[in-house]
Length: 437
Image (tube, rainbow, N blue to C red; front, side):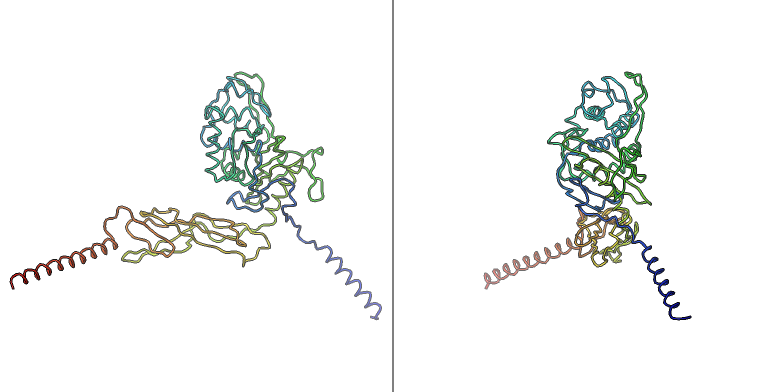
């Protein structure tokens, strides 16, 4: 084989290698930052743990529009049976905005009204449910605020059950994510928001069937008239992994959307507030794709796994195990650095008696000096008569009349009393002795 042929073979070989290397594509990145999200505020959380995966202006107070109805639905779903009948009051039929045109005296079940509330986003239904539950809109608003606070909200105030604009009716992306998290874990609501159609048969006041349809295009829209500009392509709005939740719009609030999604056993909730046009869907999809593609799950402990032990101050020096109350795991960016992860076990100040499985502390996970998750820790046994000793804990026993401190106190009192008695006797003897000398 001459030099010329060898040269040709080498060139062909190099070309083959070059073409092969160019055919290997880098994994597609779904990473985003705040500038990529056009909505005024946004948040993405893990629907199973509540861990925050993305945030943009999450504590800015904004109008929630009809996403308010998730809180209304949660209160009703948790406290009223679905088969209970509701007779429409005289005020609700005059509600403005989106509605199903309920009539005074018309009878519905709670189940029918919840579907109309969350699918059709009916404002008149929201008012009817509020008045049925609390007697008035004002009283129901008090319940809404109490419920919101109990969920951990920080900067919200609600004055109506439907989200119609009022300067005193506001929330934040963070607060709304807490409400959405609770609603997502309510099986009644979760079932309803996954549907985009529903029908209410004729009632005692209306002869025709009401056919309802959601405005959440993630659930059904495959129209060429409504395409999204997403990652350089024109795509349909429908996204198969979306399984709920609620849209909202007013002139002041702009477009608002709470979305839940499930893929390969993982679940996410995205909230976007004050978006314009179709950004409501592109922003939401960016968040969801970011969560599913840019994070991996890291497990620290399994449920009921021992974290540490605490020694009991009894004669046998027995110990109590500190256990996890659930699987301890978090989502971390794919390129996370192990050195930036830190954990801390925090044991609370407790009072005896201690029940088995009682929460006695927490396990905190921090990444880059930012807390990303906290999990409860529990006791593996009950404790009645032993004082737990730990440099991290203080335990107080109530109504206990005899312990080591009491014993020490009694001993000291006896010693002091004896010394006083001896002193008095000595003084008396000295006086008597002096008298008779």
